[in-house]
Amino acid sequence: MTNPVVVRRATVDDLAAAARIGVEAYVGAGQLDDGPDGFYGTVLADTGSRESDALLLVAVRQGQVVGTVTICPPASPFREIGRDGEVEFRFLAVAPEAWGYGVGNALVAACEEHARSTGSNRLVICVRDINAAAMTLYARHGFQRLPERDWHPVPEVALLAFEKNLT
Image (tube, rainbow, N blue to C red):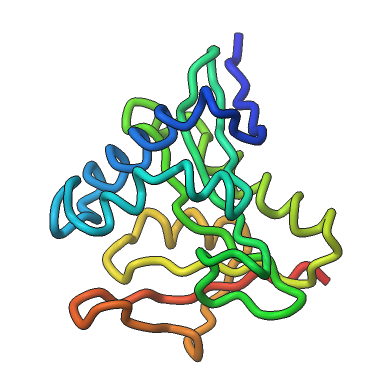
């Protein structure tokens, strides 16, 4: 018997789990240079702000929240590279114990479904240059590099932009 992954909008009861998963996933993947209590760790843990200023989704498997992603609408302060007609998503994270169960695939598919439902023509995401696993995930979903939008939020962190055309 398979255990399907269900992606839905986060509720207030999901916020703590989503925060924990975000930090644990980024630590587990070696993405938090300043540790879980550093600047980006606190951003990942602030699911309350993302829930109110963006669309916070969670992935549920066997009754447990095992993943999260944030879709950033045009007015969201979390939007970094998105432009008119595009949907940007950020903070995709899967609990380390759920890696390999299709959770990341389900979250990306939910972002694409949301983008299509809003009439957007493109889905965009930034990935840290050292995150090969994320780049592989997005390539499997048809994302292509968008190098003209690459950027550095701080000098030692390079973010690579990717896009998926939906037209």
